Length: 187
Figure 1 (cartoon, one colour):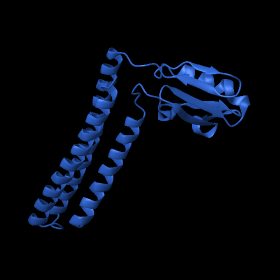
Figure 2: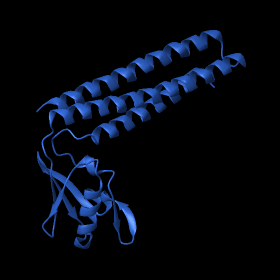
Figure 3: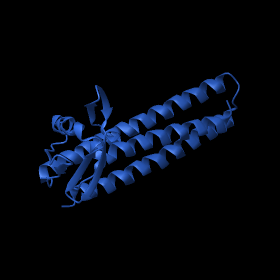
């Protein structure tokens, strides 16, 4: 394997890990209504379980309100039950027969601190995944060097490029964490 291929593979893996991290961040409640907090909700509709997005339109028309409009009003109760059953959200759906409204309560200081801890765990898990990718790539490069398909200089170049990529992605994660933490702690 060529050094450029090895680095390209690592960059692809790191970007995938970073994108997963961003998805996880979007699901964290910040005290403002965010339709993404309902992304993991599954609803039993038409005899099968389906993601909420496939049975309803989810919007955040106001800062403290999420509105769920079912495509078929016969699924209204199933959607409300699925949201109510997810205790991690802490949201109580109210329906008027046409739409479901979720009032997002303001976060308490204690809850904000818990969410910041959760944010730290998500960031650390992302960084661990990135370090695992680095470890695999370096191990692959080392075995290629031992097999004489990579020169010593190529191996050292790969090590430096891998370290540079790791610093770049760690900084990207840190910036997102700082931004999200500030968003969470802002009352």
